[in-house]
Image 1 (cartoon, rainbow, N blue to C red):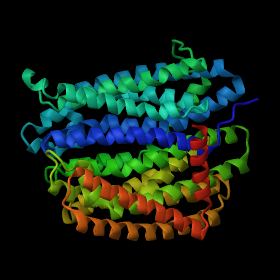
Image 2: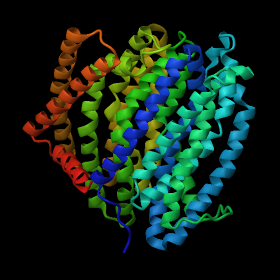
Image 3: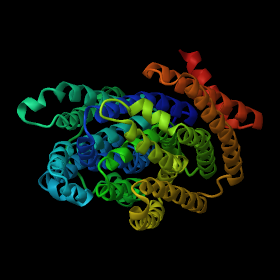
Length: 527
């Protein structure tokens, strides 16, 4: 009997729990970065990390998983575990060879890479050279994150979600410990202390791979050497990844273009954009990526057995669940943007002026939060249906529009327009993906999805207004207070917002509320 993935709500809950741990550690890492180092240093680090981070998002949460999981699932169900393990080994060996060459070429051409994505740094003495050094150190992360993505895909296909979702936490933890260990040591050797952050990225990447190995070995995985380009499974994955990498890359390519444009703006612009994007990406990782990762094996299994109705039901319910979580998250970040930025980042070298700038960027990024999460779910659905070219064309169109808008508007509106246009592009991308997904897979219960959206939007607006004024009232009453006091005020405001949202959903009858509550009750009952 073929292996069937576990229910999506249960799996997404496990992934969300692990992702919360990882994202919290990620915020700790980011907080240390902006607190310990100047905007000169953090701008250099963020640009240097942009290329490997781009590949991380594409591989770990994008094209690799979207191409590998359906193919591995079909091989596992139709040919058995030995054939599936063989396919995984071939993919691993291919990645080692190809990405190894790319890493070496990148190290030797790091100056050209930095000049291409951050040409404005050449006008600031020492900033360009520091960025080149950090780029060379961090480029091997490309290979490590690809291997981690293959391990994650294999575990997900076997219904194991918690360990691969927790693996990025080891990356963040390793980065933090190494950076702190080297912060005071490196200057004695004539090196900028921010180099410790770059070394931490490599150590953390290795830990992310190693953390998943025991679970894989327990499942029976055995590595096999050799590369066979004629293997039908490998060719299928490569064919899917070719267009798929671009198909999922619209947000990331946008960030590359934004980085290049921001490098010509005032010092700190790159840091403010990255800090805000990190905060906006927290709910995407907890809810959007979690739901997409949990749904992909199920979608692949339905596609493999030609169960069209079940596939459409899964897509529809997953989209509704994504809206249920991400619409209130979007409005919550918008109404509490500056308090959240202040609490998390404002210390050390990150000043109140940095908070003001980052808060506005967070508002603009958050406008597209629900769209980003929907894209994470819909694009892999095209892979399961063997139609990866459709998101490629959609991404190309929205990317061209967003780049054109950014170039035309940045001089008059400043660097903040980069975040706004990115969100608008994501909204357009999501709308077009949904339109063509219905043409490809069939009707996705649009009336149900629209009803859920309107209901959660109404409940979210009430929540946002109530949360905003509650925070303002408590802040006026008790601020200025120490960090613990500000954290308590923000936590009480968020808790009240969650309660208001849940009550609103209950009153207007949002069924996804019961799904979420049932999942929580099952987890509490199993402990």
